[in-house]
Length: 267
Image 1 (cartoon, rainbow, N blue to C red):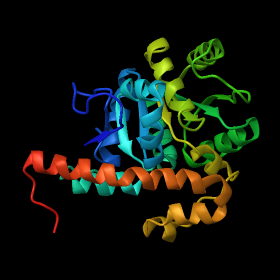
Image 2 (cartoon, rainbow, N blue to C red; image 1 turned 45 degrees about the vertical axis):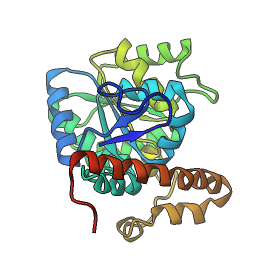
Image 3 (tube, helix red, strand yellow; image 1 turned 180 degrees about the horizontal axis):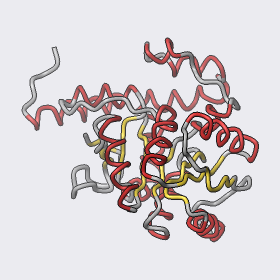
Image 4 (cartoon, one colour; image 1 turned 60 degrees about the horizontal axis):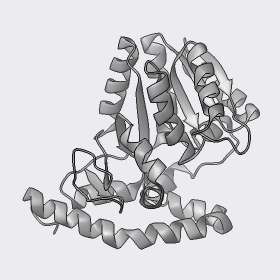
């Protein structure tokens, strides 16, 4: 499923500058491919697409370039899932925060260590302890928290990537927030090609108990956005307004793709 991101001609090439593609249909497919790559020593970069990313991708050329360098992209938000269904190319919801422990289990099963990057030293230590408690046999090789103002495209990023590679980890969970984590992952994909990188946003903070996630029932009802907005309106109101503003264009693009594919119109 392709999503227009506003710059460049949509549809040019397999993943042109004007669109981003979700190429992982569900969690089972993701975990199977990650496991295969980890066992083979093949690197990868995983991004988890949501509506906020689509907003940022429209305005940030570096973010678009980083997404194009990712091997795996899954649907992190319900609007992305709904738009895929509207386009006749349905994908399942695969939230990055839900994938932290399954990815760690895949690493343990493949016999590779994990590195944690982002957030704070305290949060990473808490997340590492939780992962090692819940995933038997898992080794956390490194916990690295970049300083405030960290530039994922600067020389300090290269030093961080080199430290991750030197740690012996085969999988790095990145929790720097978008677009920093995806830009760093794209840079690391080229500099450390044997390293797997998964951008999981606040997943480590949730795991460490540093941030509270919406209750499971709220998530099942697809109302996590409302719960988060109520918890932090000052920080999220403008972000969600921008997300709402791009929805009509995304809906139109999804319907156009449905017509091109000859799918039955939604009833």
